[in-house]
Image 1: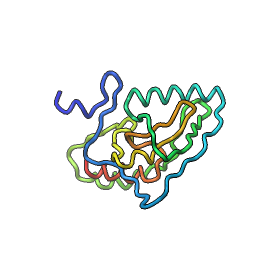
Image 2: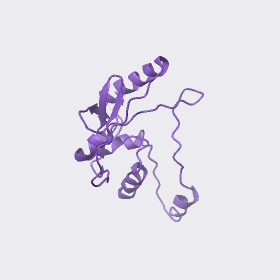
Image 3: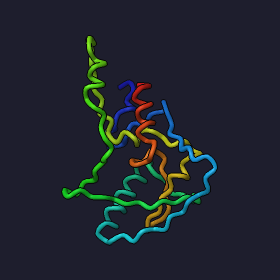
Length: 157
C-alpha cells in the first residue's frame, strides 16, 4: 500500500511526519532540575507501564540532560487520563467546507506523538522517574506550544 508509513501499523506503531519539527524557544535559559516527587506504589506501576510502552514505541529515550521536570499522571475516575485542551468551535472549520464536493476525515491517534521534537531541543523535555531520566523524541502532551505546532501541521496538510 502506498503511503503505508503514515498509518498506525498492525503492531500499534504510530505513523510519523517529517513535515514539521517542534522547537522549544527558551533563548538563554539555564537548565532547571526539579526534584523527583514521591509516587505511591499504586501509581508507580502505572508510570512504569507507560514509560515501558513509550520506550518501546520510541516516543522517549533515556537521557543525560541537565534539565529535569517532574511528571504527574492524573487519572480520571474511570482510570483514564484526561486531556483538558479546549477544542475549537465546530462552526469555524465547517464554514470553510461550504461548496466543497469531496470530503475526507482523519483520525490522528496520539497526534502529538507523530511530530518529532527537533534534536537540539530534546534535552529540554527531560523528566525524572524512580527508574531514571528520559527525554521525548516526539512532542509530549501538555507541552506549552504543542497545540500551535500541531495546528501548523494541520494547515500544511
